[in-house]
Amino acid sequence: MPVPDGWQVVDLERSPEACLRLDQPALHLGRAGEQARCTGGAVGERAETVHLEPLEGASQRADIPTVTVSSGTEGFDACTAPSGSQMKAWRKASPYRAVGVYIGGSTRACAQPQLTAEWIRRQAADGWHLMPIWVGPQPWNDKKAPATRLIKNEAGAAHQGRQAADGAVQAAKGLGLGPGAALYNDVEHYNDRKGFDGPVRAYLSAWTKRLHELGYRSGAYVHASSGVQALKAPRRRHPQHRPQPPRRTRPAEGPHQAEAHAGPRAEAPAEASPLRGCHRSCGLGGLQR
Image (tube, rainbow, N blue to C red):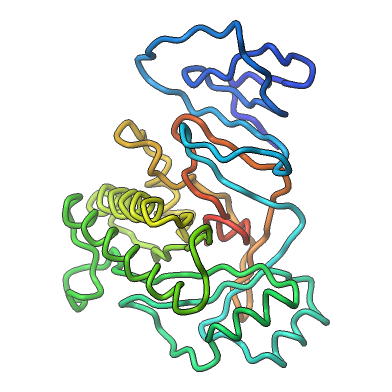
């Protein structure tokens, strides 16, 4: 994987005594050792640091935000969940093994006659990776209906983020998706970066924090030219509640495509991801368009 200029790469298999520091930009690979020689203390500012370790045997982390990813999977989403026969045809004739399903929200475009707890159960049994997507208020201009518009200040947007998380969890439970599931928030592309970047960050941060309080994992489904850029901005306030900026995906025809990259568990200590899931380019965890 590419590493930004100036980052250190630390192989923990070769250097098990190395310290997982959060104030130095670095990529740590492998399981951490006992770190008995690492000294404590406060740091002035956290750096963007990533720790990748195998998922098997990895413990849950309460001290740093984490994201679980898995490799080699492509996926798609459709406005309305396909029928069971259509899903079988997709699995037989396509490379896709992940599917995004829109479970609710004030701006969801399509009805979901097929989407039931039984549909979820059957697709999971058939080997599909499921990506439940919530479509809440959007960063649109004032001519849109108030119920569908993201409030253009951070406090108001944060309140909407908490409401969205509550609604998404209620919908997920109705579909048989209990605590531990990753839920994705769909934020459409917007041009007013100056007016909406702050509210979008506040909205997704509050969404993530509330989902964590309710026992769920958080994902963001955002556009490379707007939402991703907003999430890349300096994150000094509550970095543990910020989704990780995802990467770019290919254009799609018909259902949106998503590429899944994963395998090890990526623990992003500093200001990276509180997500356990993917991006639109990753199929299984915070999504990007």
